[in-house]
Image (cartoon, rainbow, N blue to C red; front, top):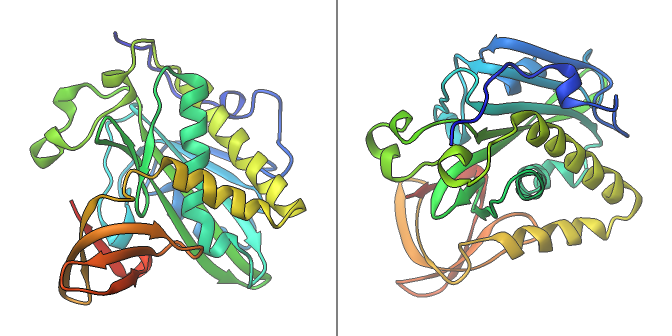
Length: 267
């Protein structure tokens, strides 16, 4: 069924005002090059917890510079800015944090139950529903991390062209209910804020976050093909390490850790 489409507003994203950490400043645009790039460029002055959203990105990107595209108004495109210490777990857990929060928000706002796929994909019925991109930079006052989440919401099957036709999907394609982008976006920010608050108070909650991610991971026990340093490796994914590496039992023998920052997933 076709869901209503309208631009998201600040009131949609934060219906009850700023959250515990997120939402002190909110930037909502019709068009941006990239919500991540927007906040990275304002890391020093936007303030901790700043949020950026857009209806359309002209240069949306995923990991390793890959392009991320969505029709205007069809997706949720949100990023949050976090000022962190140099040894903050957010530096290594940003993508996990975004993925778990997104899955929880989707489950609360729809009748869908998504999973995750290493290192940063959000999956539904074996198709890619969205992704998470965590990036960091230094500024005059320290370190900043930007966590960006893109979720396909209102696309129809015909919007996915070429190789995406069999690999991507949207909530509109999968859900039996109308898709409420506003409720989903607000839920995403709320879940991000909740995880940030609990993990700041109790360091062991980072272990809880990793456990929540592993519980949703569709990779463990399955075959994976990875490209690293110009070489292709195939094997069985055994686990995800505490630092976010995938641990693979290689076909040629032995186990190896692959880091998300330096490894490409071959679909």
